[in-house]
Length: 390
Ligand SMILES: Cc1ncc(COP(=O)(O)O)c(C=O)c1O
Image 1 (tube, rainbow, N blue to C red):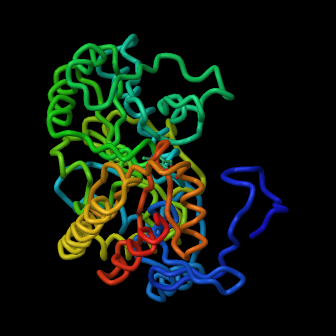
Image 2 (image 1 turned 180 degrees about the horizontal axis):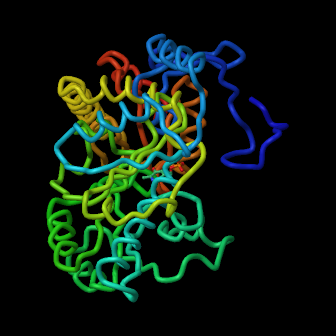
């Protein structure tokens, strides 16, 4: 544990100092092993110690590491083409950024551009939902309606409305032609693990089609197989105009992507949005390898069956423990309400017992292991959780 830190405070007063990892296991500097059900906050989809990814990164570093957004590179072109060729949604282009929040910033800007250029001024509002989380830069933070994140940074972006999640009637009221963009998660990974209902997805599709508002699916946490579907939107038949991706995209390197439809792509002028580092050759070379692996149908099917096992084991655990409430989530992004006290104290107990997990909302324990986890490792993780409940 390190307490004397050279960083601004971010999460806790004490930080585990992790030195290496292999598969779904991590080791700290004292040599203690942890089964990782946190996955670097849903980033490390392919697990740790990947020599295939390391080889791609090292080769690309030797060849060319950066050229800026004044030029492009073969890995960026190859990744972009690969992403656009992957269904089921149809996109015309990809913007590469460096983080989830940056992808959402770009998506919100694109929604405003589209609105301005198709309808003129006065249709620039943004709509988000309670308990949503879209990032910590000022635009994305303005669409993250939680006092904890927003309060010290007021005033935020004007023109943002918040509607209740999964409330079809309230959506009718909140989503009108003044709204340029609607940003939503199909599974609220940070805000309590609620999943979007198919009825709400249908209402979002229909309402956005009617008002001309751009529907942005923030799949930073749910995208690329995590839910047992390649895009989490597929599970509820959401039809987003734009999808944002980040966390698992480049095997732990910082990269994000905004998938842009033709109707928006054709209206973006040169220089209206950009970033120096986004889509560099090293991150995109690694991301192409990751994409090839996780976009195989067999990979997502395997996540789905592992997710079912996790769900069954958590449901069984719930019957044996009064401190376990609802089982939430989908695929390998699941969790449970914990009613035995503060979740952070329970997570500390798990850590001491050799399992890393996450919090979601106030009272939910969130599990997001690497997607390559085996059945035996899932059972082992649930066993550690169950022992910690006793
Ligand atoms: C749904 C969602 N959107 C956006 C973000 C922000 O991503 P980043 O931390 O990479 O900026 C997160 C991070 O947890 C997230 O879960």
